[in-house]
Image (cartoon, rainbow, N blue to C red):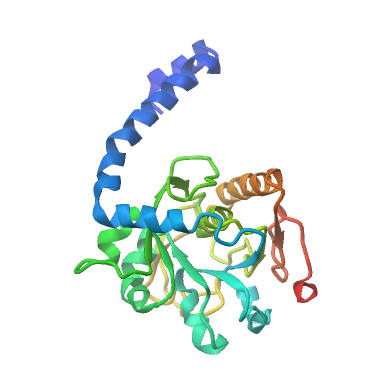
Length: 274
């Protein structure tokens, strides 16, 4: 933050400087919004997302994280459930014998390095709008592709996915907002370990030098893969917002991750859900 803004914050109460800051941000977004809306891919995505509003009202779904605990989870029980998979979850599809209902990936590095795999998936897919050229450098998206207008600026919890979604430093947060948009009554997390063996400054881009100890498959972010170190504090901020939004709406989010370190959502035994 520039020094002048720091001085303003010290001299004046929040009631004075917050509207100024919010107005500046709104103007910045307004300058970018028309281009996104008018682009045919984005326009088509808005229409598709609108058609998904409350389509699963009253039902439950599972958001499947990519943590090592997934290896100790009987995922076969989810074959007939609604499921959200994230990033490279498709590596597990052959072993499971089924695909997730939806797939979400909003990280630029993941989308850039895995776009060919994503293009082959014939399930509803949700990607960040800014990754459109990384995912489809040639040609146009297939009918299963939806673009989300995700941003790093927040915090906020979007109840309508046709607008702006804060990423909350984790693709899981994008899934929670999509699940709310679709009307799911109950959302259950599995494989969201919320702990990483790799340490370092959050959001720092690193290159893997061997097998991946942080995910269910050693080749998930295998040797040579570029990825960003986790920002667990920001993720937790988003999770608290999701918890409050769901509970205020009379819905809930449960955490059935085996041995997970996340403490935001009520814990539930995975096997007791079936």
